[in-house]
Image (tube, rainbow, N blue to C red; front, side):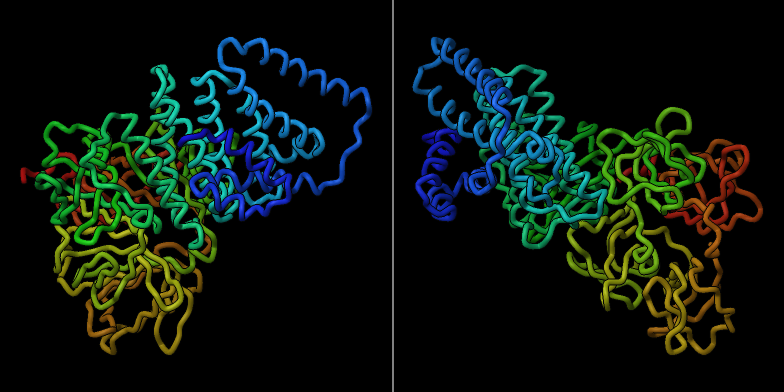
Length: 602
C-alpha cells in the first residue's frame, strides 16, 4: 500500500467529522474496509453518546498522563521524522479523547465483550488505540499476535455458548494476523517471534477447520478469506510458499473443509493415491511427519473439494506410536473439577487451547477427541457436547457401498449427503463399490447427513445391514431408529418393542427397502448412564487385556465381538467401568482385518 493503515484511519476520522456518510468513506478504501468499519462505527456511536462529566481532578490527572506521553514521544523524534509521528499521534489523541468521554466503566465492559455484543466495536477500537503507542516493529507484531489470540479465545467462548461465529470476529482476526505477518516478513524478526507466529497460525487453522459448520452462510466468504490468510501465513513462515503454487481461493474454502484418512499407496507428481482415492497435492500443501518414505504410512488429510479430485490442504503422516495414542472417548461426564473432567473413569485434561462446542456439566453426554497422556489421563483437543435432540436424531448405518461421489454416498439402498466437514476414514481399505461402510450421521428433515464414514472389514454376507441408534417409537409398523424408519420384512421374527429412548442395534439382510432381521438387541437401556464408548487403534496388553488410547479394557465370555480383535486394528468398544479402574467390554466392533500399526506392503 502507498499509505499505511494509521494514515488512512486518520483521514477517515476527519471525513467522518465533516458529516460524510460511513458507506461513502468505506467505498474509497475497499481493501481496508473490513478493519475500518468497526473503528469508524465506534467513533460515530461515541459522538452520539451523552458526555460523561468526570470530576475535575480526575479529568486533570488523565490529561496530565496523556500530555506526559506526548512529551515523551516528541523527545523521541530524533529516531523518526516528526511528520511520521504527527498523524498517528493525532489519531491516537482522537481515540484517547473518545475513550475518555465514553467513561472507564464502558471501556471496561467493552474489554470483556464478545463479538455478538454492541460494545464489541469499542473493544476493537481500544485495541487499535493501544497500537498507536507501540513504535518498535517487533513489539507491534507481538501485540497484534496477542490480539489474534484474543480473537481465538472469543471464538472458543462463542462455540462453548452454542452461538454462531460471525464475520466480524473472523475479519478482526484476519486483519491482525495479516498485519503481524507483514511486519515479520519485512523486518529482522526474532526467532522467538517467528516461532510464535508459526505455532499460532497452526492452531488457528485447526480451529477454523472445526468451526466451519458454526459460521452462518452470510459470513462464509469471510470464513474462506481468513482460512486462506492463515494457511498462506503458515506457508510463508515455514518457507514453503512458491510462485508455482496453485492459488487458494476463498470460495473454495467458504463451505468448510473435510477430513480423509487412509493408507498411502502411491506418491506421484501432483497427487497421492490414498486408499484408492486420488488426492491432489501441490506446493500449497503442508506435509508433516516422516516424509522420507510416505508409501505405506497412514495419512490424515484435510481436504477441500476440487473440480476433478479432492485437494490436500494439510497432510499428517501418522506413525505407529501416534496411532496407538489417539482415541475418542464418548460417555457421560461424572464430574467437573477445575481443568479436568471425569468420563467413564478416565481423567480428561482440559488444555488451554481446547475447543468446546457446549457447556461441560455433570451428567452431560460428550465425545472427547485427543490422545493418551501420562498414566491413564487423556489430553483432549476437542470436546463435542451432544445436545439431547442431536442424540435422538443420530444414527449408525452399516452396509455395502454401492456408489460414492463428492457429495453423496449410497450404502445398501440409502442415500447419505456429504457436507464439507464429513470425515472419511478408509483405514487400509479402498473406496470402491462392494466395500462395507459404517455411516455415522444425523437426520435433518428428510435428508440423511453423513458426519463420519468408516470403511469396515468384511463381515458376513454382502447384503448385511446394521442400524444403531435411539429407539424413538413406531410409525406405520416401522421402527424409528435415530430418525431413520426401518421396515422389517414379513419373514422377520416377531420383535419385542423396546422402551422409547433405548439404544438399539438391528442387523439383518437387505430385501428391497426392508430388512430381514437376524438380530435385534438393546445395547443400552435409557437409565444406564455408565456405558462408555471407545474408538481407536487397539493394543493388546495380555490375553484378555486390551487398550485404546489411555483406556484399558478387558474381554470376557459375555463380550460380543464383531470381527476378529487383533493388535493394531481399529475398534469401537462399548464398556462398563469396573472397580479396579479398567473397563469391561460389552460390545466390540472391529473395523479392520489386519493391523494399521504394520500395514502391508503396497
